[in-house]
Image (spheres, rainbow, N blue to C red):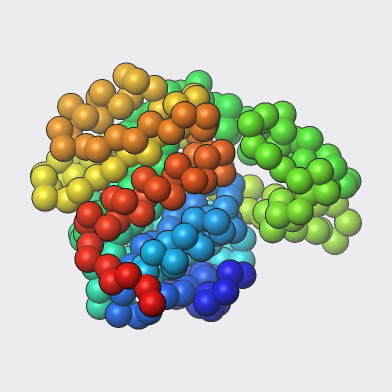
Length: 287
């Protein structure tokens, strides 16, 4: 855990516990980080350091069914469930906040706004209401692969390298272990509940597309799309369709990055998000 962060727990309306890292001054405007499907809050580690250094309060939490947050025996992983979780995370904030959501986290943010959440700004990381189905299918195939886990960390490293060759992973798997858990059989499995992929992606996309109408009705809500130029999820056509709905949409294209923008090009990602957040909310320079 980065210096200045403390472990926090939020409780959703249905009783689910959401585990987070929280840091920065409680009086500072907040940035809420929502990771993508199949990830954990540790995916944002380097971004958290930069946001804290820029003077923001940061809340970085594991989505339900991921990491240390509660998993649902009933498979309660609809976007409506996740939007309710986000409302619970932001409920006690008395300061403006910016949402930064990657993939599933971005979809969650859009649905939460449709249900009444009012952030000061929204950053969508490589996700649009009409994503390229080929890229989505590749993600789901990766997540459904290796259902029996891995015998060694080397096998997990090889699986990540095959899916995302541009992602630098330490040969010893340092860092990757935060996204894995050891089962009673000694095998390593991803630190998320397999039930989260029970529904077809098209089901969730339909929910997001309907919720996007609320964004279109809020021209005073700044929205930034950070896209990896090598992404197979967000195409030029997807960007233009989104811009047709939100003419004020800002877009930052990050060269040398795929769908995992923050991991592929963390420097460019941090610059884009911090610059947007500073334009959106007033933050005091840290001492």
